[in-house]
Length: 376
Image (cartoon, rainbow, N blue to C red):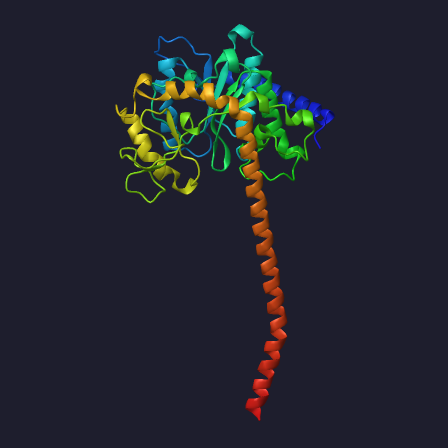
């Protein structure tokens, strides 16, 4: 069970590791040339440096498609003054390098004088294709007058939290969220994390492990998180053109409209899932993004973003608690049904195996009788 002593130990260990990581990175940077592992500064731009920066990671075997996807951020970064930091070396197994790198960057920013810090970090997965460099990230930020306590903007798909793209305020709250995300696998090894760090973060975002967490920890993060429409900055390709549902043609109109499907003029498209088909799915979108076609690169006032976002914060944001309660209830019901189906399937297999075992002696006796009959 999580308790205050365990949380303090986890915090101390994680903070120590991250402090060492930051120091090591600094020493390492003194001995290597600037590269994409350092900040992609908005060279050639007269736009002042934004208080928002992007984070991503790309390491392992060379992947030209993912490199192109990273390069597609360059005009967007120059247009609005965004710095972009990309992790180039794997630091932890699986995708756990992701929350570790975010935590590293948060601590580095918080170590600066407040007036020099970034205000927000935006994580962007490598399978994202930025489609419209004319859309500023600032439009998605919560209005400070009423929603200044919101420190994370996240989105859900049909399977729960999808953290392919999400916003984190540079704040100690965000440090604790990433610390808790990293620590869950170690301190609660029996918890099923189907999608690794994403599932761990999703648990803290919705805090539904009631049996594991004390009340104060259950409520630690929820009040500072807002679920926003997925299409805003984490859209999927959806159905476009004459395809079989696995591929979408960015030059064809939508054949089936989904709430989370990208529309012309939207910021980006996320090619999550179907890893074996990802290159085939991403390539057409990458080709279109590099052509800077006018039907995709609409000016902000030509899109519906501003009206949609304004109405969300006015009408939908106040319903966040109920919306998340409903999501938790649905996930728990779905999990219960899945367990019941698995139990029923296991019981049927057991019954079938018993029946086979019972039938074998009878079949043997019948076979023996048949042999005796033939012999006589």
